[in-house]
Structures are given as structure tokens and as C-alpha cells.
Length: 309
Image (cartoon, rainbow, N blue to C red; front, side, top):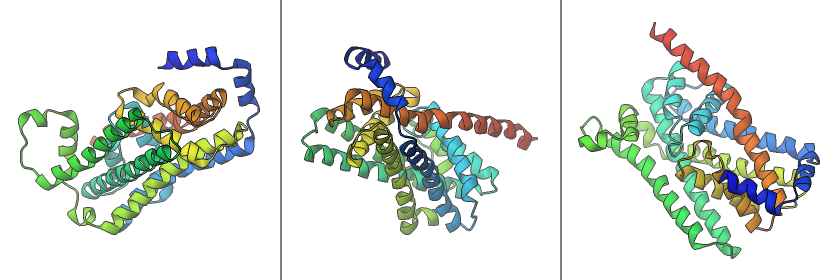
């Protein structure tokens, strides 16, 4: 995918024009893109904060935002439908003095809220494509596959929580994802999981994450002189995110860039601008946060032996 994407740039795109777009990017719009991206961490942390407040163990939002950066690193490096950082989340909350049951509840509720918002926006994206006469059977199939994943993952977690400690068939228990969930979900307090207002609040916080990512791409496009609508940016971000979620490629390398660029081009954005805006988006959403995420992750791993002693 990466080779095909760069081949397309060299074949169809004016490389000099592509470089000029990046050099002429307007700083004001880039600053807005950075603000949008910072707000995604506030959205993630806000969902956890709501659960911790409800459980009577509030924690500073700034500290939870650091946990969000660490979890992002784990989620991106360990491709497992967004499940890679869940163990990291529980461990980090435990370090903050949160009980294991409350930490697991924060994990489950954030997972349910995340996929609920994700599924809603995926259907919204497909509807917008249909209204613009851009929907294709392939897109509908990808969204349908994603919806199955979005329902299955939190559904499996809740089912395992309902079963408690009762054993599962040996073949199922050997699945890594099931093993990881079995080790955690049984300890979540049922009172928190049944709180519908809390779930709605967590879902709203996670919805802000997707809107902020779309806002980031919207600002990147305008920084490059493209008068694109927020709807265009939203469709491109959602389609690219869905492909990455259901794909096995670490960091979504190539798949996100190719899908976002192709979708933007389908919606009328010039190829060079679509590719440049996508690369700016990836710089802000992936590459820049990876460095602090790796540092925080190393600190967490070093702290484990100290706690064990």
C-alpha cells in the first residue's frame, strides 16, 4: 500500500507543487489543528474522569491525559482492534491509587462508549456518502464488517462480566483476547456498569475524539489553501480509521494514508493537497505523540519492578 501510494504521487502528482503546499501552510490553521488534537486527549481523559468521579476516586484531568498518551502508544503499536492499551490503562490507574474494580469499570465503560460513538459516526459517514452519491458496495461492506467488530468487542466483555468466574471451553480460553478480558472484567462493579447516565457521558466524551480528529484534518486542509468542508474531513477520517481498526497493520502504516487520500480525492480534493493534508494529520495524531508515549511507557515498565519489590 505504501509503495502504491508513493507511486501514485510520483506518477500523477506534481512533486514540486506538493512540496510547495507544505512550505506555504498557514501557521494559524496548523495551530488550530494542534489544539484540536490536544482536545482528543482531554476527551479520552474526560471519559475516565467521569467514571472515577462516580466511583468516589476523582483524579486530576492532566494526569489522566498523560495516561491517555501512554495508552495511545500501546494501541497504535499493538494492533488488536483498539484493544492493545487496555492492560496499560488498568495498570496506570492502579498506580494512581484507583482500586482494580474501578479501573476495570473505567476500561469497560470507555470501551463501550468508544465503540458506541464509533459505530454511530460510521453509519453517519456512510449516510453522508450516500447523500453525496459517493457510496459504493465496497464502502458499505467495510462499514458492515466494522460494525460487527464494534458490537462484538464490548459485547464479549460484558458477556464475560456476566459469566463471572465460570470456566469457558478450553479452545475459547486459549484465545489471547479472551484470556486478557477474563483476567479483568470479572472485577468491575456492576453498579457502575448499569449507570446509563454515566455511560451516556462517557460516550459523549468519546464522540468528541472523532469530531476533534475530523477538525484536525479540516484545519490541515485549510492550512494548505483548500476550502473543504468539515463534512469532507469527517468522512475521510472515519473511513481511514475504520480501515485501520479492522486491519492487522501496525500503526495503520500505508492503509490510513491511502484510504484518507483516496477518500478526499473522491470528494473533490486535489490529489497533492489530499496527500499533504493526510500526512500533516498523521504527524499530529501519530508520529508526534509516539515519542512522549514511548517515554511514558518506558517509565511505567521501569516502575513495575520497583512496586514488586
